[in-house]
Image (cartoon, rainbow, N blue to C red; front, side):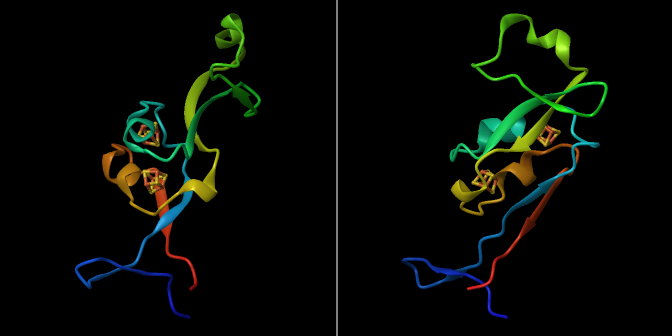
Length: 103
Ligand code: SF4
Ligand code: SF4
């Protein structure tokens, strides 16, 4: 299987590795990955005591923080990812898995 790659103006070939999974058991909800991603791929969510995800973005009600136990990062718009791996590099808990895709 050949991997999707990009030829840069220099002529060098780059194989992007796209965001695959975030290990939410390891995530501490620090938000560092969110800050470095310029592609609006990621979204912080709450997790309640039953392990269910609760939206906590700008749309959420003010008292929504009563509805979850902790915050974790999630993948909201995977199709926006350009495979730069900045999120993985900044993550202090090694939560990320990135994968190349077939050409
Ligand atoms: S690999 Fe890059 S574009 Fe994709 S989610 Fe991470 S920081 Fe965003
Ligand atoms: S940088 Fe890592 S630990 Fe921090 S919110 Fe992102 S995935 Fe979670």
